[in-house]
Length: 171
Image 1 (cartoon, rainbow, N blue to C red):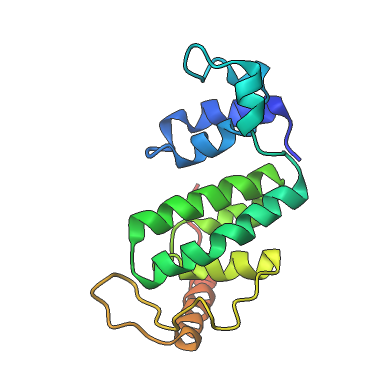
Image 2: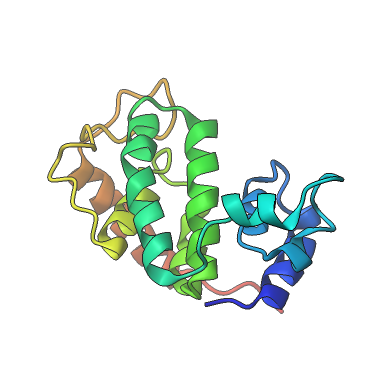
């Protein structure tokens, strides 16, 4: 689990990268009052802050991810790109808090309007949708007719294989 100092440093590091503020907002709520007070509006007390602050522990964060996944899948099915970007940003932040950097880095760039990322995350946290949430129409953009999941996954595999044969950029 990340320390308060690591979370504060990450908030500062993201100040120029997190254009919509989703990741910074999510990180802020995990800071204790002493570390968060410089970011809070004037007049917020420690009691108020402690009353809304989520627990910084593995199980509560995992439960939060699982609770948010159905809504994220719905947004992806509806091709609501900005809403999916928001959800995936939160997921990435929560994975970072859990020190799951390798999974967190897979969250962007979004592929198939975020469905690829949601599939990875669902499997990672043990969220089984059994076809209940994914409508099995994977689109690259809202006007796309879409293709079934298995074809989309095959295209991703072909792309990754082809990419591995490309020469590296010169240093």
